[in-house]
Length: 65
Image 1 (cartoon, rainbow, N blue to C red):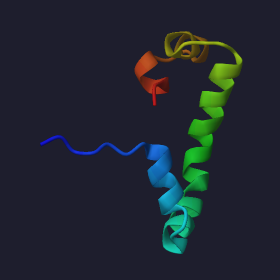
Image 2: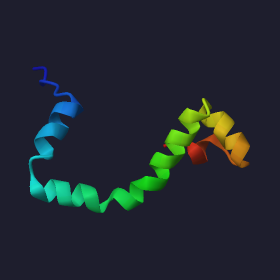
Image 3: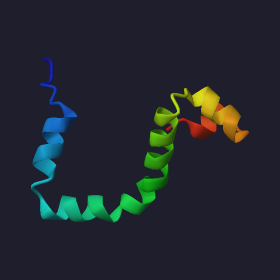
């Protein structure tokens, strides 16, 4: 039997209706901010993980999410 796959966007819409979920999600914002900033900066610079790691003087494993 094949399970029905639900797109994460659809699930997220449902989860956002739950005030407890929203509060927990918002509470984690500061923990995800550095990663989000790095992803945005790497995308803005049009760099792949390996290039970003080299520019930072580290390895690809360190910068990959």
